[in-house]
Image 1 (cartoon, rainbow, N blue to C red):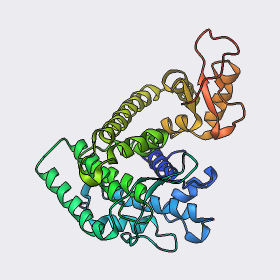
Image 2 (spheres, rainbow, N blue to C red):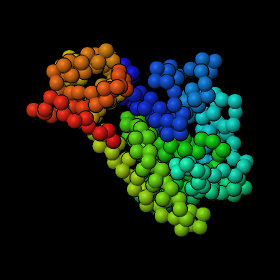
Image 3 (cartoon, one colour):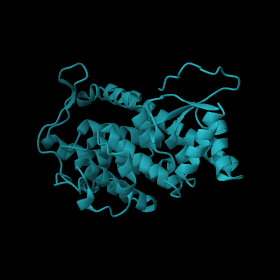
Image 4 (tube, one colour):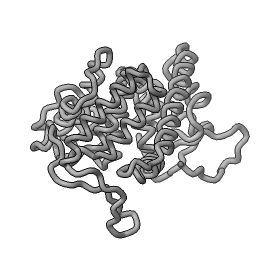
Length: 329
């Protein structure tokens, strides 16, 4: 990601993470080519790459219009859905025509967690949701984050399309946050934090959906989760700004060294350094990592991993030569 800047690095993280939440994973070596504008469909190797590029298109649609976003509506959301599946054989841009279910196989058998409204009910509920949301925003009926959270929770409960509801919900989250003036997601990936906390993401969602058809659900588990994600994003953004200001002087190797020793998490990955210092090449980062490891300042958490997949731990001053391996969370 050399030279693409913080916003560019965040874009890649968001596309990758939001896709991965739904099991749409592509080879790490293919990501840069797939996120590039105008990636040619004939060069896609499989459906995952096509859907990955579709998320890129939908996200870029929102980002390009960030200063003049179209109001959320059924036609606009179906337009985003059409972009999501624009590189596949179709299926995008239409509301569901058959009943869908939210199921889990966690306990070794199929368990229905939630039954969304029927296709016929969806035709009424979805436009009504957007109408009520726009009116609530205009009336300043509640804090903007509360309104955004309620919008996304209801959208996920309606589950209006056959495939891609989760990705659409995260796109809507970004759109609504932009409209409300919360533009941190341009520089820190909200989707990456959701991916890293996906168990809590699903737990909060399902906790808040219980009783939804009867109007007896509790919105606060989901709102609490969303607030925590946004607060962490703003903390991360502040830390990145401070770190970049402090790292501005010195050679590129010095910048990498100072970031790792003074600003990186205790346990960090190659991508963390790359995201924090997007103007510095991968070979330079690898060289500093090797030097710091040789000096005993850092160590590999997982000796089986290598390259960009490696997890590193910064060693405390005076630590023993062979401390126990930290547990990644």
